[in-house]
Structure formats: structure tokens, C-alpha cells
Length: 175
Image (cartoon, rainbow, N blue to C red; front, side, top):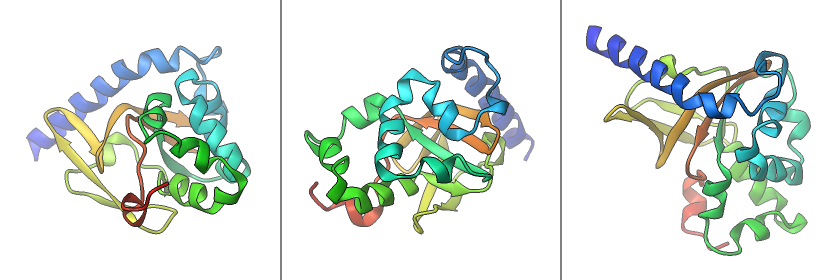
């Protein structure tokens, strides 16, 4: 138990260090007064996520009271999707599919990195669960690595990830 506490403290410290470049992109450096959408909008590397949230009609929801925990894919994560996938998802006729994918990145409640444990399952707003893995000093959500943790917002927390999470059913579908 003691080694787990030490590991979690080390992870939290590493996450704060990793978070410094993203936090510095916000001109006032005070995320606690910004909701999740505003925090993402203030972070250059999350601009594709913001575009997707707007296309899905989720801005109002993710700007609401919450609290929410959002696993936010970077622009590079979206760029790594198969060619044409993002463009297809952003089309109005595919809004339901986009909403399902984006809500698979959201957990109700505020889950900080210190609340995580290896093998932990978290139910997403989409309805299916994601799995937390802690190994080699890093944290993963399904197959996505957390690259910046505990970005606080007025209505929850954002953990930046390097891969777009696809709900299990969606993985075998072609976009």
C-alpha cells in the first residue's frame, strides 16, 4: 500500500511537470475559472477536439455544471485516425456516431490521477466502460496514454491522451 501511495505521488508530480507546456498556453493560467470547453479551447493541441465537440452539439453539455472527467485526445491523436475518418465524423449525417465517440471520452464526476488504480473500470457517459492501466510510471485509458493529467476546470478535470478512444462496438466498423 505504501509503494502504491509513493507511486501515485510520483505520477502526480510527473503529470504536473508534463502539464506545464499545456497550462502555459492559457494566457491567464487560471483554469479553475474556465469550464472544460474553455480549457480545451485555450489549449492549441486540443483544437480538433473542440471542433468535434462543436460539430456534435456538446458544447453546452460540457460547459454545464458537471462535474465531468474528460479524456481529451490531442490533435495528433485525431490525425492518426484512418484517412478520411475525422472528416466523415464531422459531417452532419454522422453526428450520432460522433456523439457516441466523444461521450466515450467522458466520465461523470471528477476523477483525478490520484483516484486511479491499475485495472480500474470507469463507466463513460456513452454507457460503456474504459479500463485504467498503470505500468512503467505511466497511465493508460484503454490503449491511450495519458500525456497530461489533472488539468482542472470549473466543472471537472481534463486528462490529455494520445489516442482517440473508440467504443468497443465501433472498433470493427469502418468509417
